[in-house]
Image (cartoon, rainbow, N blue to C red; front, side, top):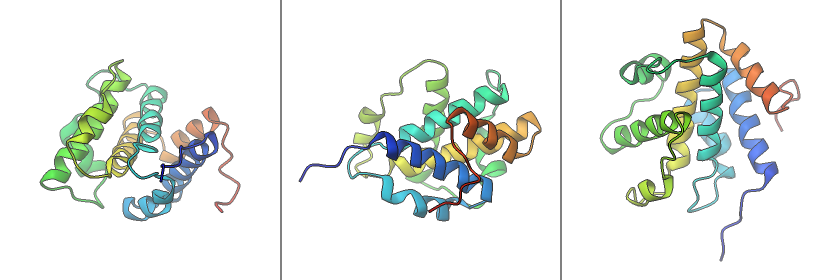
Length: 164
């Protein structure tokens, strides 16, 4: 049975759910549960969308080269979740791939995640986006709600409408 292809509506919903969840202070495990249904089996979606939003957050916050030290990101901006072993390597890839994409390098997601032999890239991209968005707001010294509002505006998303 073929996997359903994500639609533009799915893309919009992924961005809206990410931003609404962050705005509400939803922690990563609960945010992932709310987004899991958008992920088609054997597909990077919505992972690449989360990477795109994280890149936009860095741009909006004016993050300079080397402006977000990797060593500090997870401890300071994703304290509710701990990554060990292979999980630590996966989150590192998702964060560094997002940085590479911002710098103009295509991180070749499919080639990398084939080696993972799991269908969980979307989760690590979500974790990376949460971390990068939180750290971008902190680096700019603005409330995260302000940065999320600017991201929502960029995508023509009204976060005052209740989540279904």
